Length: 211
Image 1: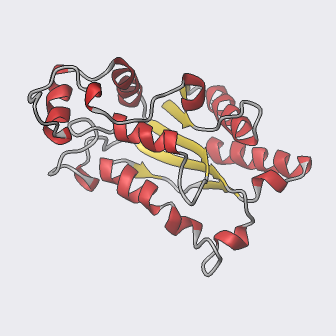
Image 2: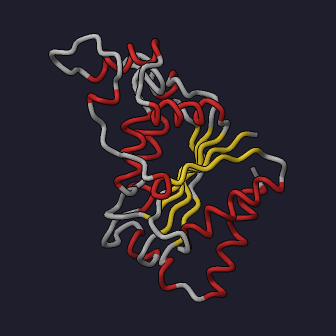
Image 3: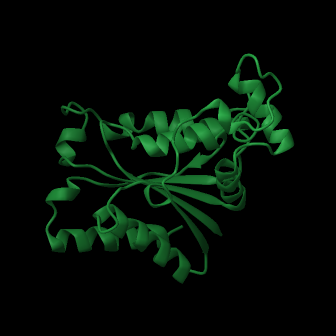
């Protein structure tokens, strides 16, 4: 399989980076091809803007939807968008790996979605969910939280983690036609002992081996 890991954490020596590296190494050992989009290391620009469209159909008023359809037909997106689109086309599985910040993914990863999952590439108004343009590919969320599981449980202060992830798993990934596999979640990541961290790494290895 072809696997694209899209990851977002600003610290290269973080536990999130260890999860990313573990995922890549485990999948490669199984014979899969792996590419990584490390958004912080790439200094990926998360800001969706009209300059992303190099051949506008209407230069007077910017309307993102028709411009995106046109840019897909003419391959006239900005180079960094085209590069990421090619990785997505290549991939059979997309792994989104990130820490949960304010009950969602980091802004740079949301910006990656805004700029890469364009109309005509990931969806159209008549081709979403079961008919999304990325149908046939799968997605997995590998996430960490800074608080214990009880905080992210049903009735907990932050709410059920699975409900919090729905805007990502359902309204984003499934909307584009991706089949979303159950997430891999590490709770209370910052407070782990070394032994607990190693146990989570082994748990991730087993999960990915089961793919």
